[in-house]
Image (cartoon, rainbow over all chains, first blue to last red; front, side, top):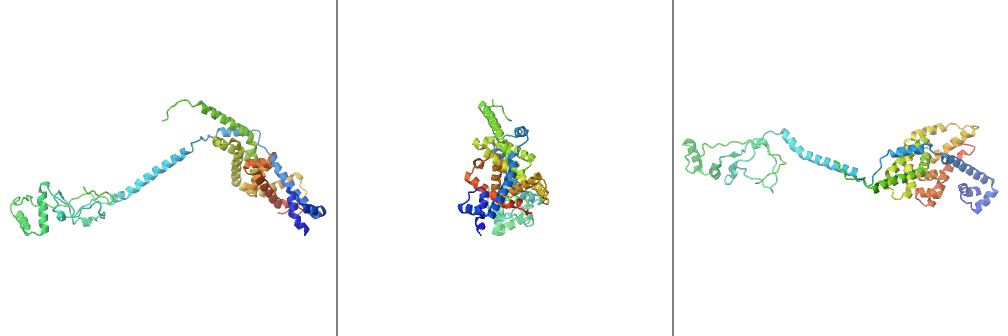
Length: 232
Length: 187
């Protein structure tokens, strides 16, 4: 029982720690604890003997010259140069990001362009906007403004029913008047047109000198949905 | 295209020369240290020399960055230790083969040299199993001429810390290696 109490102190003694007085007194009279201390000392001697190998080990005689040759072949790291590879890497990253952004922006257009056919019609009938004097071209009834929400791209089949009309510039006012009259449901206009078709061309008393009015659909390319809509 | 802008300033040239000279001195002072640290981990002369060479090459590349040149040995110690540990982990398969070779049955009566060699191998295997901080202290303390103060300087820790770690390390080693000196060896 007393040996167990001093076992730790005796092992510590083998490691070099000083022995307490009571442990020393016990060790002096206990052969078992003396044997334990001897064993611990032999263990430590075994460890120290193995470690002596390291103390005595040294490199080969030509080690220094080989190290010199190895070191002289190594590039020296210049101070302040650490940022150069980092800057090159960052620049490359930015360029790649820009290129990717451009590709992604153009991708929907390219996709639409590859599958689209020539648009047959681009706007609504001119009757809605016949009174507008500045038009050389009969425009859609509702012109999209910058503030108005963008309309979805119309389907070709639907657009074909609302052709845009082109007229000679000098007849613009007369055509606008004609459409305004038609919209108002004035019966004399109907008769005027009847007389035009039946009588002599260009005999209209109101200045409408068009020969039989030709209304033709205009074939233009479809605008991409992402293209800006200009008001002016 | 680069343009020629003039002569390299003499002051910089002389700085470069003095740096090389200083590094040469450090190299001469510390080549044994780097080798011993690497050998303490790898226990193979060729591998240790190779690791020490790599450590010096790294030290040479970054020598200009080391502001306090008095810390060169501590710096080199850390670098060599890290390289050696990495190499040791990579070569663990080889170490396992060596372990297998020393695990042959115990043969009482074998000659003293063979017994001592086998015991040393077991000691080093036990050292390898120590936690890295304790292992480093054991290796550095075992290098000739290193007392606890010197080791504390290399590790840049208080001397008391070195003593405490060394005590813990030797205690663990004794517990793991006690069977080597008892009559019934542990296998």
